[in-house]
Length: 455
Image (cartoon, rainbow, N blue to C red; front, side, top):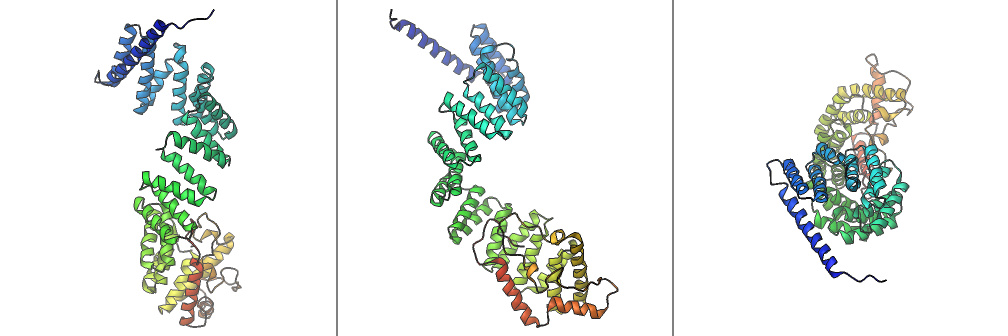
């Protein structure tokens, strides 16, 4: 027998569904305003619904109450409400467990998040959000392949589950599957075209894949939505540098600095840019700011002193190196330049003292196993030309220095010999030319990279 369509039954079901929709909307509108305390408002609405035999709708309002507390960052109350469903309403256990898994994951309790995700999956194996939550806990533990499998299963249960698509794309990206990740992010962009996170990943994947023009296009899309984002501006600057467009690279780094004037990478890049273009007074301003942000890093003050020295302002350079020496008395680079500049300024008595200190500092380096103890920390970056202190007229520790201690009892003849070795015997004119040649070599004549700051 063939069942005929029952139009009246379908109409009744449609009207019941419409009435339920109206009731749910009215309840959600009333709950936050019906009482002075929002929580009491939800309780009043739930009570009225149960009184009128709308138990399932009352349960949904309890879930809505928990979600309200989550949005209000009242996590403890949200957890208390959701846990109340663990042993009573079986139909809502999966939803409550899914929300509890979400809460615990964002609280950093991945074990509890995994436990509640398992509870949700036991009650509804095809709940896409429960599968995503379980995948997230695995991803946080480094189980990328297992997490990826769960995200794919979630997409099978709900092809338009945004969380599953996004997290699967992230997992693919982490596994180096860039083509697959890019396809998923582009699909997601079609669903949520205003997402800046999705646009960022698309631009980043194009950049990593060497598709510079496409990367520039997508970063420009990002800048149209977040025009003052310092990370996007700095990334555009780095891409323009790879394209040999130094003017645009400078423009984007400068805009990034205006948006966020505490980004050390941007500050260092701009300082190095001005040094390369011999605009030392502008470079000094950036290196001084870097020294303010990282007062414990001596390299920034060495850069300030170096700018004074390169610009020919030897008195200020001497004062800057002297101040560094007071705070870092064993810094070999600082002592070397104090010897040079003190000699240039005619401070012969100070030259002798600095040479003695320099020899002691160099021997201390040898005893400690190298230059790591007193040399300025190097940024993590590709190899660049060595610092100018390592290329000075004196070859450093191990350069054939006589095995003789330096100290108060050293005679003047020995000191004069050491001064000759450090200063050289070709006269001041020769020393200044040599310093300029080292300067050009040190800062390089190529493009500035993300590392950008030689010591």
